Length: 75
Image (cartoon, rainbow, N blue to C red; front, side):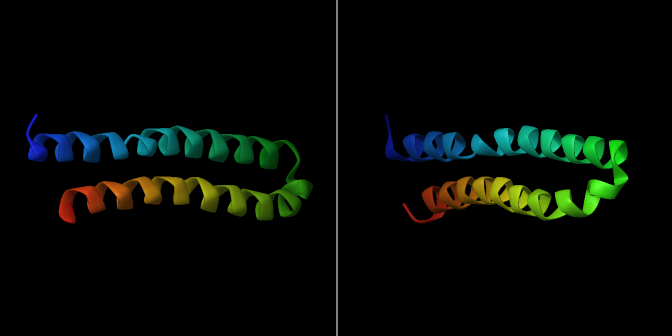
């Protein structure tokens, strides 16, 4: 296998966490809205936890994207 082909395969594999991030964000938003609509008075208590979970989930995708770009353009 040539080095260029291995680099492209590695970059493609490094982007796979983005699929999990999309699924995770869909579940996260759906559950947050479900809880907020069922009990609107508890929305303020749920919001801070929601933002923390959103940031951690999004960071996972960004790390995968950065690793993929590093593989493509640095190595």
